[in-house]
Image (cartoon, rainbow, N blue to C red):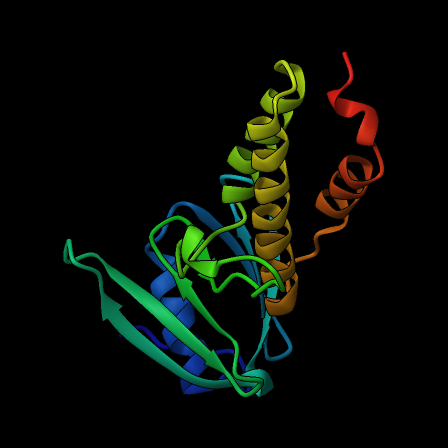
Length: 172
């Protein structure tokens, strides 16, 4: 395990940095006991502060690929895989969380927004209206979950707000 010689860098930060060093799908910057980590796939950035980390665990998925689980003092967790950061979606009132995976990524928002837009372009039916409402809850659940762990979600919030405040989107 390579040690980074940055003053005051803890064992937790070293574990994270060593893992990231071998992953081409991330860009990261280390500064003052924090890592700013950017996913290459969607350019979403999250800050990981050493003082907020409770524990860093190296784990393996069913395929044998290694990933990091970072537990924060706040109770939140993230999973850093070979290319993405996974997190728990926010539970929403009136929405069955079993409809979506227990771990999601910010990239999932792209497919959900595309599905919503496709339904807006289709003919309105009672089923399509109900499906849009479910997809809105899915989108909101992922977006809030991402925000809870530190992703900046301004663009996604603006898009969602435009969808929420545009009931005429179904009218062609």
